[in-house]
Image (cartoon, rainbow, N blue to C red; front, side, top):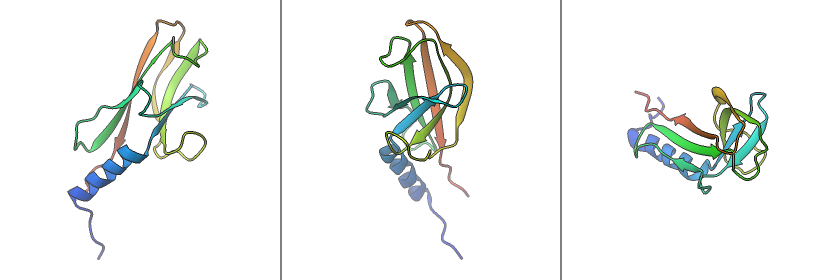
Length: 119
């Protein structure tokens, strides 16, 4: 019989994800990458409660951010371990398409990663 992972093991998995899955990619409504950002970027932060089963990355993008060409649509996000290329480590998380048209526009995205304790 296989050994079950205990609660501390699941927490270790969540800690590993937070420490190593470092890049969140934002995509447009056609699935094309717009930005890939790291938690080192001031626009990105981990916002879940310590010890929570669901990890949460929050991203705040404004129309005045460098590198954005307006108008720009945003419709989904994925998490990666590398800054470019690589394979996504989460499924695509979709949200209502937002078109950023002005430098005063702002979008907040919350990407959730669930690592539940299976009992």
